Image: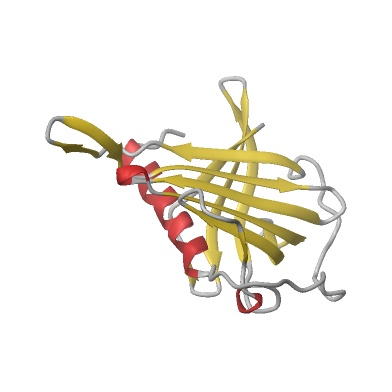
Length: 184
């Protein structure tokens, strides 16, 4: 399955914007709630997965390159015991950067149509903007108020690499365009 650079940039940008819209920073943090949904995650879905995109639009200032729009890296780590992490890094025009990390409970479900859904429930996390101090993510942006759904998941191999393909959604809606991450 081939993806155009524009599709990859669009999907990565939507994913990153979705994460940012869920993430406000606040001081302090809460312990891990005891009621976070988790299930055992079967092979081949357990593992470390990552995707990246390179912005194709460049910005120049008086003949000097100042950056590109939208370089991003997204990584998820899913353990077979139902715990996981969601990491992201974004580098934008003029050197702006953002980093986030969520610790998550992870639940696996086989749907009636035979597809697989993996839901990640963030319960703690941190963000960092432009190299500043890392700040805890506000509790209103964590479980039970937020979740990330990877629906219609499938794992496949192509050209010697293994991929997790999925449709991304959160409580605000979903994408009809499939995304994919490569096994690390």
